[in-house]
Image 1 (cartoon, rainbow, N blue to C red):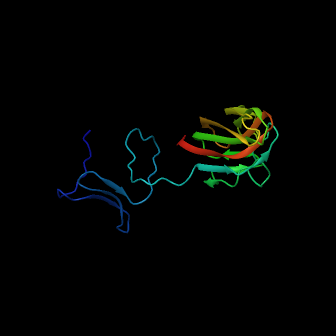
Image 2: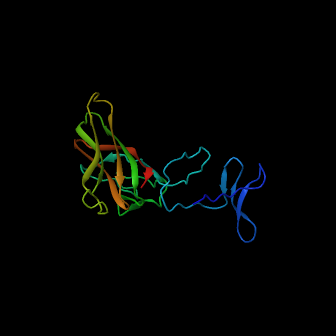
Image 3: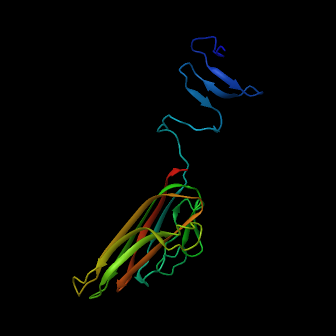
Length: 213
């Protein structure tokens, strides 16, 4: 069977596909550069190619959280995702539609994909106070990812606050992070734990989609 060849009549002419009103919908110039007038949907798999620097991505699938919390906490407490009861995160900056705060502690990852999640917690002790061990944890329910307030650790960071100067406050910080393939609607939470005098001095967390699946 012979190939079907469609080509313009001139050496620099463009190949065009138009709608019934004569509007260009697909245009290919003499160098093969193709322009589509509207969105492109592939029913199969794009197996190769490069996304150019001028391609604009949507401003979605990331959330930056900040906690101004300051004060004592109980070992095992999860950070609240609303209100001003310590420990808590303020409303997130970013995509609050696809990474959603629900109930009092969980964040729902609406879209499945590979995400980077980080959590940094800062601690302190006043005067002669100290804490032997302090933890910052990212958690979910591994056997049932859509169940609330999961207790399975995805990542854990540890530190301590030593009494180095009885006349001044001492500080410590713990950071943890994970990269994981999350199914749609997975719930995660952030937990503080430790032993000794437990005082939280705020922190940050980030949830970022690396690759949708």
